[in-house]
Structures are given as C-alpha cells and as structure tokens.
Image 1: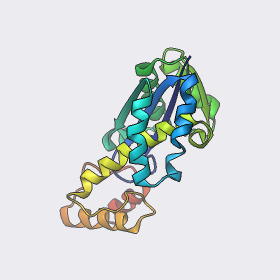
Image 2: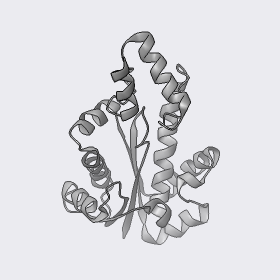
Image 3: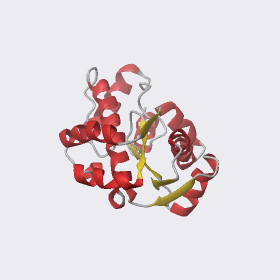
Image 4: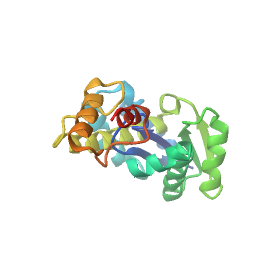
Amino acid sequence: MQICGVDDAGRGSMLGPLVIAGISLDKKNLRKLNALGVKDSKKLSPKKREELFKDIIKIVDGYYISKISPKSIDANVRKHCLNGLEAKHMAKVVLKLNPDTSYVDSCDVNPKRFGKEISTLSENHKIKSYHHADSRFVVVSAASILAKVTRDKEIEKLRKNYDLGSGYPSDSKTVRFVNKFYKKNHFMPNFVRKSWKPVQKILEKS
C-alpha cells in the first residue's frame, strides 16, 4: 500500500518559484518518518529541515519536486487560476509517484473540490485533500520539508546577487528591494511575480 504526501512552499511570496513536492512510501513505513521527528516544516528550524531532507529521501520509495516559475504563476493569476495551476502540478507529482492513496494540502477553500480536480488531472488517482494536511499527516509533513528546503535554496541562489530579504510581502526588505530595483532599472526582474498586489502597486505608482 503506497501512500503519497504532497505539499507546496512559497505560494504567498512576491518572488521566486512556487515549489510542489511529493513523497511516497509503504504505509507500514510511516512510523519511520515519525521516528525521525518529521513534522510540518514551519515548526522546524532551517538547519533541522535540511538534516531531515537528507534522511527523508533515504527512507522513501520515491519523491518528486516540481518548480513553478514566476512567469507561469503570473499567467495563471491573471486568469484567476492559481489553484488550478497548483492542482495541475500536484497531479504531475501524483502521476510520477503512482501511489495507491495521496494526501494533499489544499490551497482551495473547498478541499473536496481541490481533491477532485487533482484526481481528474491524475487519471483518477485516489486523493484525500485537507486543510492543514502538513500538520495532520506525517507523509504531508515530509513533503512540506522537501518543498521548503528546495524553495529556500532557490532564494539563496538569488541572494548571492541581490539583497532581497525573505521574498514575502510582509518583509519590508523585500518590498524595498523590488521598489528600488524598478526605480533604477525601469523593469522588474524575471524572478519577481508581477501579478502580486504589492508589485502591481509599485508598477502603478511609477
């Protein structure tokens, strides 16, 4: 009985990719994840997440990580279809891992609807979709760690050239960076999500 967990990282960020990760393993091995101390990535330090990333990929039977570019995010936000984009990439993960049952963290207000969409897109795989699945199911917690570590690495790469903070709109350093960059260059870098409201405000002001 192969169980899969799928989660995202970086959905609310103004910049960088949205990362979807999934893991699959035999149901009887779920306790191994618990024994490692796997929990929702938000409850772990960056160092602990990196350690667990290495341990998780040794235990699981399969894992797959999909990165969604800011360009693709912008195109779908303009069509009011960000949830649909995420469902498509979650389905891609499920198809790659081909488990018996998948647990996914729902970004839709209606988890059932989100689960049905992923099921349709993944050739009718069995999908169990819940809010806060990353803190409810260890298999989704493990996926959340893979997604978060991958996303953090992408931001680290950008930080080598830019002083851009965490990437989130709540971070004044990030907002300041985007503002300054646009004022100086009169264009937005390709890693910034132009459809995001704080970015739109900067564009409108100028």
